[in-house]
Image 1 (spheres, one colour):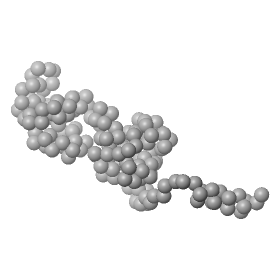
Image 2 (tube, rainbow, N blue to C red):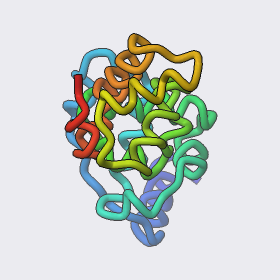
Image 3 (cartoon, helix red, strand yellow):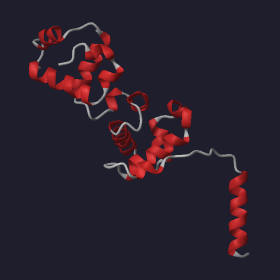
Image 4 (cartoon, rainbow, N blue to C red):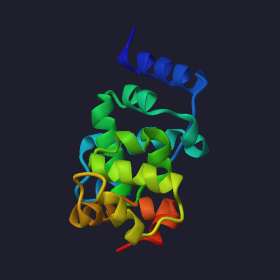
Length: 161
């Protein structure tokens, strides 16, 4: 069988197979500071189009042929470049797998979600019950702000520094 015949058969099989067609902007290649893992996750997420919230991080990693850790890091990079929303990132990864945050910031986030009307003054008073001090609390708040959690939790912006 000739190469042309094989290529024609492969093309016909591809056209007959049920799959999704999607379009991705080539701008992803020009975005600085994105590695191949971030680009691949972007492609995989794009293939889900409006169903991006239906996929999970394990499936993204599998389809992107990478480890879960690599997929999470890639999504963090895409979030920082504002190519995917923090809401999508948080849904797929969750706050506790966001390794941009220290345990202090994760704990503070959890506490603030349970006590949405807390003030910085009250947080600082609570810090006396642990080894944390004002500097640690303020640093954790800055981490949350930098990682985009103030956007998703407006009540946190009320206690912003």
